[in-house]
Length: 174
Image (tube, rainbow, N blue to C red; front, top):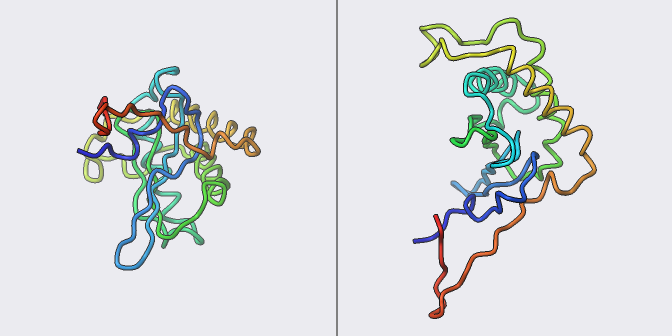
């Protein structure tokens, strides 16, 4: 069984940032999945689940209403490990090319007094939101992205070394 690409990332070395998780060709068009890592896995606490949910709603709203990007957005949603989000866009852009978009998207969280779509009719868990904490995480991450814009480590995945068995097969620990 092949190891999926996101499990080949060295999670002991990854820092918050924007990374290409994978690229796929569908009907002749490139689709890019970005890993938008908000915290350091296994070093910092995971993002509070209610804050993550609120950021998901707000940033999805922002991205799908951005006049330049709205037609390119396929998906925005949280990682299961609660250390970041996945963004899926049409096309092939480097993480640097979407840096400013993501800074603006995370900055937009501070402008909300309520979470869009956080009512019983529009949300599968409408009581699980924390706007105040979402604002904290979003501002912290936007500041980090701006402060580290010239640091290649926030744009390049650190790859994990995988063992090869004596008979030449890959050894996977996942």
